[in-house]
Length: 102
Image (cartoon, rainbow, N blue to C red; front, side, top):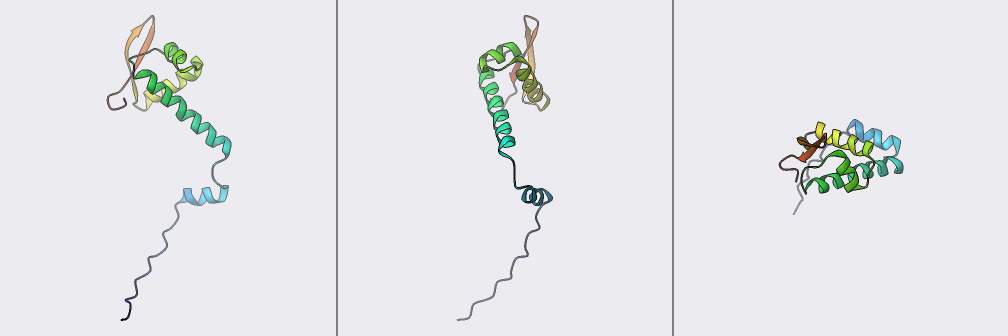
């Protein structure tokens, strides 16, 4: 029996980002650690907010973070739709997770 030759698939063109990654040798270890730390902080903030709305100082204490770092992440999470201001306590806005983020 003779085999039917299969048409060779044309090589898929590499995306510009894939080419750049090849040239640069990938992501540096320092940058990889930076992003891992960012993800760890966001995860800790989400976990702290599962117990209910909290202010930035309360989140900082619950996650053992500095207040400026906590505020930076809370503002980023708010900007990208993960959090919303729900009320106010002792002059501080309280932040809660949006539905589906819990």
